[in-house]
Image (cartoon, rainbow, N blue to C red; front, side):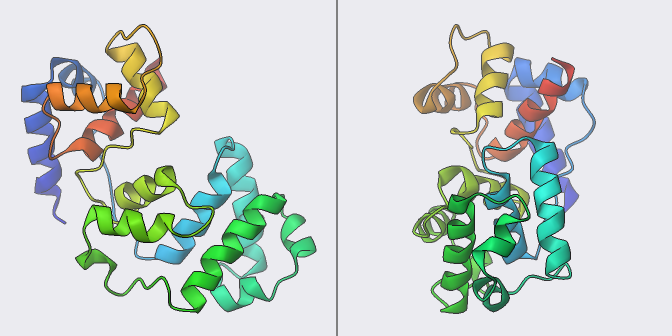
Length: 204
């Protein structure tokens, strides 16, 4: 995916949404990139669920070092829970990472043709695995596959940013987020709009 698509997104959003126009003007350029290590990315996302950035990074670093920065599903499945727990992983996250590893090992989840699938197909496939919910699926689409038309309506940061930037009285729920995105014509660049909403929290 070429950078001119990001440039088109910035022009579109700046033209259609005055709130985003101001955020974009005061932010560095959007730098969404692809990540071809799909399995590793999903493992990291599971580790990061409901943790601070600092805690997630520390646990992920220990996890990756143990597997020499190249974890394989079969290796994870054969690693005992006590070892995995020593990295700081909870019992639930150990289960989720092993569920993902098993799905890949048994080829129920294949990555070789994932780029040919639609967003909805990918979400359905990923969320069929215990421990991977809509938030993780959205993050995978945005930050791994670099799909530009994803609206992560369940993300707390997006909801908080909308509340602060669009002056909503309460933290918006899914329907509120979708209404604001539709009203301000974010499509087909919801991911870029979201990136700038996340970025705006740095200054708030």
